[in-house]
Length: 149
Image (cartoon, rainbow, N blue to C red):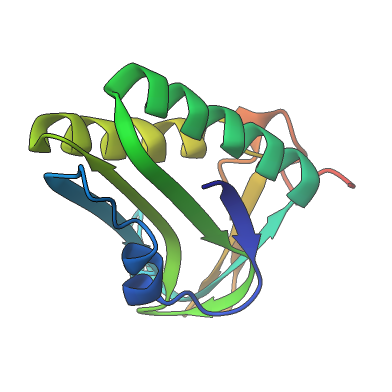
């Protein structure tokens, strides 16, 4: 399985069903949802932009690392792009392993690495009318928005 960027809503049940493996004793998933606040601001919605080709290549690397490090049977992850509303599913990670410890550890490893390494940018829309790009400086991008693709 691989990492994907999607511009349409994610179906966590279908994603989890695709992970099934006869040797799996454990499945762990992570769902990242759009919340209504951040850093003291009321958030109305988010926009995600990505350099899709690079994000998918690096995402595949993260999944391969996790598969080897945690002895996973199956692994998948998907990140949304576009304009998302409060409660929307923004990112999904799922793994299967023979044992629960490996599944839990791998799931956390994957989401942490994806957030740290992928060229995906988040723009928050606040109730006050302001918008701010979040975490762009940590990726070497422009403070007023993502770097051109």
